[in-house]
Length: 145
Image 1: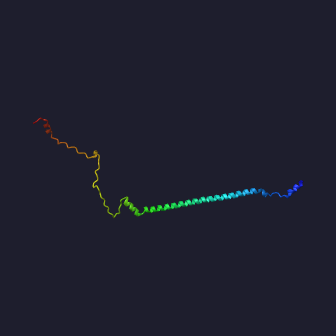
Image 2: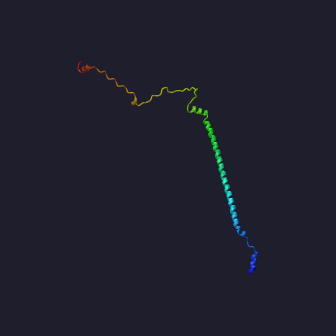
Image 3: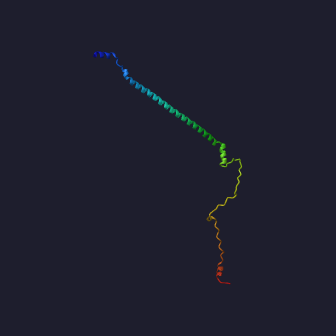
């Protein structure tokens, strides 16, 4: 009987080596396909992020260009000769050299400054009485009628 069994084994082909490695090949293939898909998703997400950044920067650039245009218009307005003349006339009261300006003065004389009394001019002391000659002073002491 041993011989029959050996013959039966000899007739049944054994599994080829490929069938034993098939699950490993499938796992490796699935991992490779998954990694390739992950890389493509990562690249797509990176491209979308860069695209969003570019859009944001273009919008910011457009805003800055608009602000730059506003500032240039403001600069041209402030540096125009008509505006400078208008400001000189209104704020500084300037006139053209050929114009004649009449000013009305309300007070002809300025008010007197108020000085403290110690700075006022002092009155000159009264001159001494004229001195009499010595003989008149001597007679004034004597009891004469």
